[in-house]
Image 1 (cartoon, helix red, strand yellow):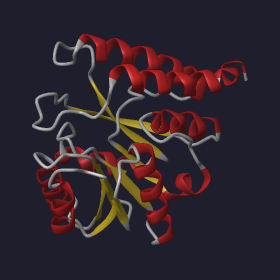
Image 2: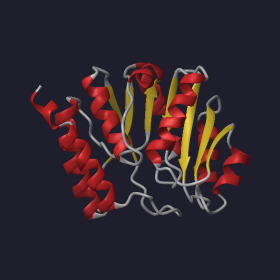
Image 3: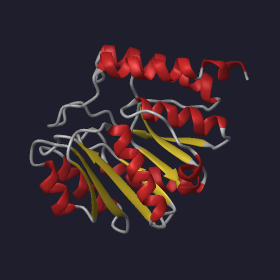
Length: 226
């Protein structure tokens, strides 16, 4: 398994779930350094991260998940990591799957935890949006991505040194896939369970986030014909 590994936990108003996420990562990846990012939370998230994580990045006001990831990726590069794992703080990602996702970095540059979104556990509007954006992202990135909206990912540090996505929120992750795919980096996937009954609601705003993702896809549309 790749080491040193930095596990990134971007969090915004997730005090009901983030402690369990951090403890789960430390249980299943005990050698990883856990980097928590408080994205301007107004609840107890910041104090929980400061108490449970190995390192923290603190924003006084909400910047967006894309900014949190960008700062975290740079921290990992600057501090000698060979890979990163990113996991959401809302409890929708099962930490017990983390070792399998990280282990797949032995074969791939980027590994995405892939949900089975065709089942009834996924709200129909999320299911449709995910299938549509994943299909377009796959065509533009030239990579067999199965879940473009999953934020449960492991990435080798060489990718982070080269790929510089745009965006401040969820569109950042779509831009990342497109840029990495067209740069020739390889993608793998690991099945993960679908969890939508977590104590912290997702910060994904269907209308606004989907619009921002659509703008990224439109910006890269010419790559479909390359």
